[in-house]
Image 1 (cartoon, rainbow, N blue to C red):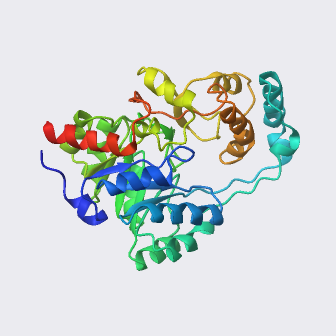
Image 2 (image 1 turned 135 degrees about the horizontal axis):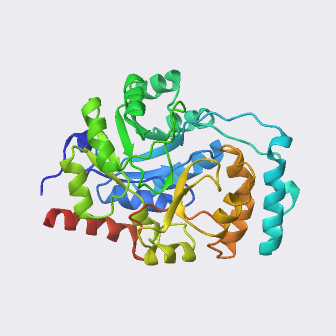
Length: 352
């Protein structure tokens, strides 16, 4: 089986396989393992402080000499008042009490929202050569600055309109995200309803409309789905859920167990956890928030409001009260190393 060449040459990698950036799950160890095997590891730093961003980059660089991508969130922060979020704040306090978690109003106030503009200098200082992003597009000044430093830019599109916009902004590659994909939707053009197009319908439409290399993302978890994406014109594939159950993953054991037991109908799109549409396993927290009738604040406000409760649940190994992002092809095997998962994908593809 012949591997596609254009993306590998652009990114300086051997195999056109990208490990999806999964904030809260993927780690420097995961990214380094994929990069060391010839793929493109991704380090998720969206919304983190400059200090945390630098530490994660330095850790990854200490583990591999191969290229890896750093993934940013390219969104605007909405304005809000305390009155806007008070109903949700009270709901979360009530839910925490019922669940047995100690949460008070002080945990749900005084949020600090970092943007990619706070992180840009770190990426340049650390010589990052590949930057991917989602939730929007970097501003033109930032695009020009990164490209002057020789950086390859990968934007995320969930519709043809978004892909055309990214091309107009001089972005180098497009991650085409189908509705099957786990985690947050990359949608950023708000003049239409949430695009809910399957990858294998969306991918050929975008490839027909733009002249940029495209990375297929959503439901890719096997040699067969990789081959299908390549046949439709993808230059590379992006894989996330298959790595969530690995030893290098930060996912709690109960989360990994859900992956082992996953069925195709177990995931749902929700705004409950973060205020932004995302796909994950349905659980009690998702249901309690959605069924409350209380308006869910926008991202990243809701994300910050629910953060402490989700962290308490994770520390307790409670999979019912934290987000469990997963795609529609989520089934995975626990405790395998990232290296082993990657090698198996390559081997199975070459055996087709």
